[in-house]
Image (cartoon, rainbow, N blue to C red; front, top):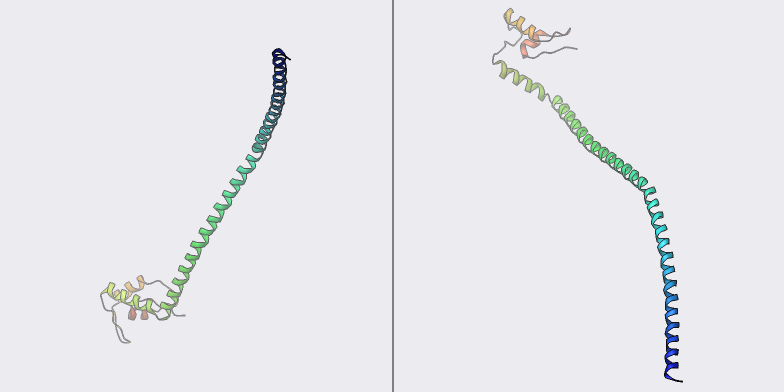
Length: 161
């Protein structure tokens, strides 16, 4: 065997090796093109799924937002209505207590004394002139059971039941 035969054998081996590499490259290219087409199909499927569920996601988020706003409004209403009812309850209790100890009556008498700054005659035999009596009658509301004598003595209007 000569140098020419060795060179020919080496050339054949290199050619065979190149053909194997070429075949492997062709197989790899086919695998890559199959994977690329699968990815393309997956991309279309993913986009369709996203578009299909995007509306559902948006509507679910919108409904959730509405429900959260409703819960916030209800909690706000409950908090402030409870506070308001407690205030009203406390005011009623204070009014009842003050009414029971006749504190409001005392304040009314003191206010009338301070505002009028004139003394009305009191006592069973006290007399008053008719012009002042008619002025007092005009300032007091007319009830069927109104007692003008008590009004003149205490400077407040009383209704007898």
